[in-house]
Length: 349
Image (cartoon, rainbow, N blue to C red; front, side, top):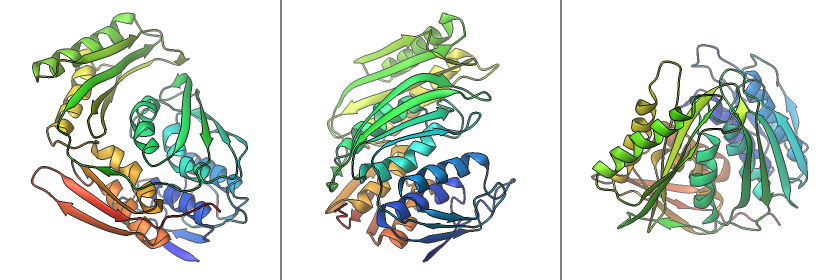
């Protein structure tokens, strides 16, 4: 049984979710201790428990210590990932994107198609919006051979949550290594500016602000769809932008908050995107966090350039070294960072 210190580096719920996901894929029993020890409310919260339960259900896992406040769990898979329909209510505004982040690689190696129906937060702080997952992450993961579709039935904002997403995943026998180097051309910038139960001008102003900043920075092929009546629970707004380059897809997003002007929301998303593009990277730094697991499991050597190595990505690399046995090398460049990984060529057979 591999023992994992949940307080290392990033020290949050990501360590728990990724550890259980890799355990499920590799049929490797694990123990995670010091769970969220550095947080002001240490131990498991309800949203962490529901995510672990979902992954556990996919591999008929024996799980001990799964209760609110628990600082240690043992996760023992008893089957390979099973293809079927799964339902999970994260509760309140807990992020559905963070659950999907952990469940998707497990579903990718299932013995049949997987249908995930998740209820919770879709546009909440401290997590990627589900629209970013759909428009930025999925196209990048497709390069590995991941076959998935996401339908956002309705948005869920803090504090009510209640958003609904459905993900359909077809299994892959083996993942392919990828190579994403510095881009030479930005082909187009696309985006969606949305709001729910708010005046239409909120979404319009977010989009206008983002477009003005992008064009003033020299980007001409900009098209942002305005969705002022997005279906959802409660009130909220957001904007997700993505730049399609000759190498990959770079994302930038921002959420509306009470008292925060729509123009500020649009500007934040545009500035995030521009900052990443200035490094000539084919992906943004948050996308890298999500690619690490797939690089570790893929067949062959993957190379990915990103604006920086975040603490989340650094933590994911350590977990993949420990649990998967993949080899990683991080090369710092003048304006970005290159992550090289020799994957283990994992096969579900």
